[in-house]
Image (cartoon, rainbow, N blue to C red; front, top):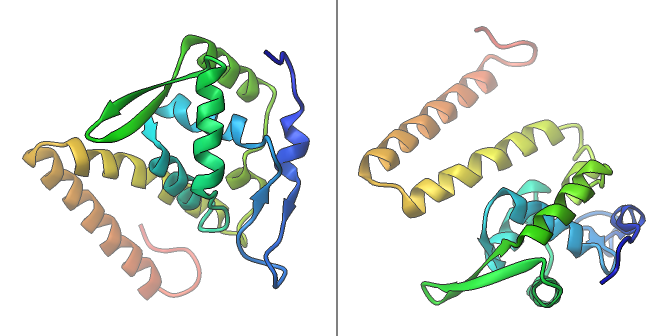
Length: 175
């Protein structure tokens, strides 16, 4: 097993779309710290990883299944990730060694694709939205009726507050 690899450089290397903007592409090998970082939060299916990356980057970075699934297979072969079959889908989670490697990446300040660009000055808003989507999805999928109802109210209240901010015009919204 490799002990150290400089993923920092790989994560900062990207290609722009055909028109000089749009989705970004991480260099080969960059998927390792990205997947480990996401799985450190919670177990996920491969498609969840793809959609989470798309959401967190504000739609600017969405890996293909052809990059996620082979990387997951390699991580599993290296003993960093384990998987179980759940509802016809393979759910991936970190092993103890995988948790240690993920912590090491975090400790050394590896920049992830959704952290590397300010996303047009609105990166903090997009990250906050991505943080909201994760638990909302979990409640929608696994929550009971009371949890789903409470979560729906929170989201509707937040939506109303956002429209109020828009209606107040430029400047600081009233509290």
